[in-house]
Image (cartoon, rainbow, N blue to C red; front, side):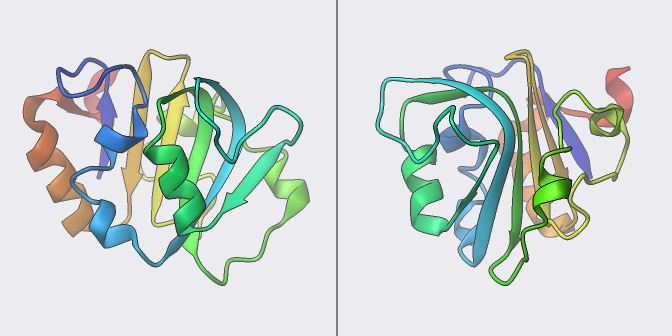
Length: 152
């Protein structure tokens, strides 16, 4: 299932990772996080910078980012298995501005179980491969989670 958060009373700002992942974080303990095409605002010390094109974070590094006061403005954030092999050429082409972002069940990294797309501080798109995670997310955000197919 694919969801969009456009407006929510639960988040301080768009793509507030701590709140977005709150209902499913415990289920994501065994994944690493690939972050590409990222732009952000923060007052915190985080494992991202503007010198690299992508970041591959372990659970603790991602938790540091998630628990910081950081707004992701643009970016593709993918939860992948711990043994995922980085393909640098492919990673450099991933973009939150890709037309694939708006297509149902199309993942820019096919191996990911969850893809979060921050789109210009206006939308947070979440694509799930796991129905249980999708339902937990939807139940937490209720009517604030809009089906991607109904947005257009």
